[in-house]
Image (tube, rainbow, N blue to C red):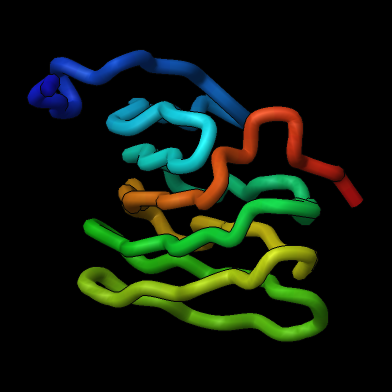
Length: 114
């Protein structure tokens, strides 16, 4: 057993335009990550052939583009993304966006950019 937190993660990485990720669970069958996106940043649209994902917004407001639709997700709300759906998350606000991302199985080697 390991107690994890933002200051004591299993690992930390940077992605995109100054975005951060902190690994809380990093197993082949499950990944749980705390991520932070600065204001006015966006992820590249992509999909996963194996993984399904659940995003839970902790702080801020996120916009999700899933296939051809846009979804606004606020703090204390979550959104489930089924395997195979093209998606991306955007922070279109002037505030940081923080969220938990659970992927099952892990998205390691399972990301196809559009």
